[in-house]
Each structure stands twice: as C-alpha cells, then as structure tokens.
Length: 134
Image (cartoon, rainbow, N blue to C red; front, top):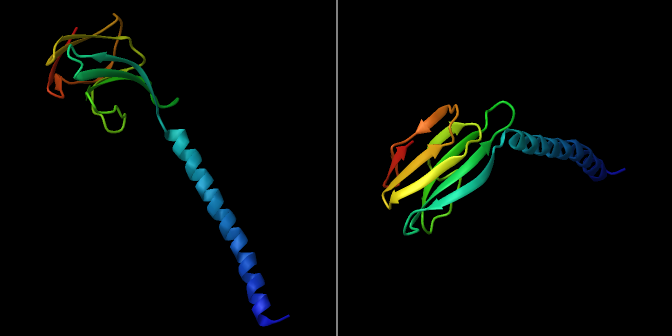
C-alpha cells in the first residue's frame, strides 16, 4: 500500500473518535442546559386604565432544588414580555394568586389571597408606576 493511502486511513481512524467525542460533549451540554433551565408560565396580564402598561404575573419553576416562585413585572405597550429582559418588581415563594388593581396610570395595588407568603423582592415603584401592597 502507498504511503498516501496509509496516511488517509490513519486520518480517518483518528477522525472517528474525535467526532464521536465532540457529539458526546454537545449532547451532554444540551442535557445539562435543560436540567438547569427554568420554566416560566404566564398566568395573567392586567392592563392599566388606558392600556399603556401591563402588570404581567408569571410562575417560575426551576426544578426540585429551587422553590417555585410567583413574579410580577410591568411592561409598556408595544414591548414584549421576556423573563430574561423584563425586570421583576415582585417575587414571592411558591405559586400565589396575585390580585392587581390599577388606581391610575401611575399607581397600582398588589394583593395576595391570605396565607403565608415568603417575599424575595418587593419594590415600591417600577417603570414609572408607584406600587402599593395589601
């Protein structure tokens, strides 16, 4: 056999394990990304009196090691809610029923069904809106 043919066979023999290893690394990386990913479930949106703003309430579920949470954000008309890019003004432990009542374009009241609520985050204003809690 010629030297060129031997080199071709050697390259092919070495390329197979390298390609298989690359595929395994990509598969493991995808599995780990999915394992640690959170799922965001949109519950409700509450429009301001003119409809120029929304309070968006979501449930965030991140698996067995991180407790579920309920979160709320304010989104301006024409903007799309994105859990990665829309800041939350409220975050509480577990799934909660959130009551939202707009007082005006610049003020909103937030309440919960009575019960024990562990609060992670509770801002007094967001997106130019004053937030009052009951």
